[in-house]
Length: 421
Image (tube, rainbow, N blue to C red; front, side, top):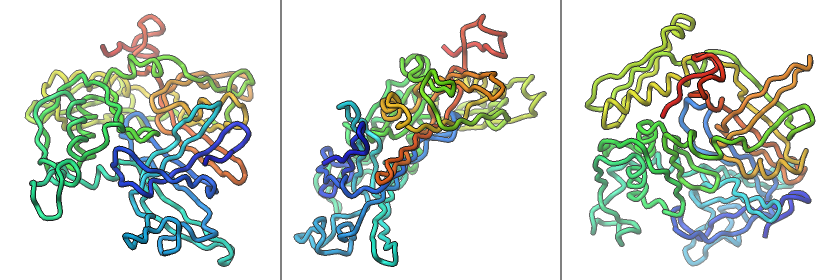
């Protein structure tokens, strides 16, 4: 059963000891009572990068030795099979309940299982180091995801045997679904927007994660594993059309009028500047765009890429959008750290917001001057200690709407650029 983190939030930590990693329905064991602390990290460094595998470090009390894989008396030992149920790739699910609403915090798979004995052996803890589905995607190639019926070691079609991988020219989103189908990733763990661009056939020797990321690049999309474990594909138009990306979902400030934060950091540099794009689709001709003013000020900073787009026009459209986003450095609010316990109204934000959601941050300087910006969430971390009841929620951020604003709000090319449509 779940345990109270504080008077406002209950925590539930479950492990699928009796299920396989991609089972459509998991049988979970509740281990909440043994949780001492956990840290989750999900997302990407900034809007220019690709999302990486989300991780979780889950520390559990092992005082009665129940989580030791070597313990044949453990309640998690399968005597019938003669093996422990504490195995790599068992599903871990963390949920927080606030105001009678369950919020997913993390969904992934056990990766490593170190057991340690602090206090000179007077105590024992196990640390389940977990990673999301990206690791499993990265461990398979498209060609190895299908087998011939009847091969030794494989059995029922759809269980341990599937047909070999084949594709065709199709929408990026259809390709993503096709790839997930061939590795038998559960349909319930998918959230796929309909794509805008079509993609070519792919190399069957590609690993699954690279193949999925190629679809992401060709769509100018975002592909990640959400906090509820869903393989999430957001098309090119998502940030221009989705309400959570367009409208501010939460406002943070240090002036006492909005939700409070503990720390905020800004930057102003050329680390996110690219002013020359030279992208080529497989079988196409190189498409290039550049910003002469940016090149003069910051020297040439080039992005090169080979894509699986089907037309040069699509490639050119994508790099024009990207150039508008990256040609000019701007003052950025890079990160935000929040203590949800500081204000009860923070909980639904800290537990409910996800990548791509828009927030507003206001910084009041010691000289009383202020700076406010609207931002998209690029990464989310939770650092939770159940014993001390401390909870830190950390975000990395990117400027929202930097690829286009309504003409007339400011000078074109400085505060305003033409938007992709």
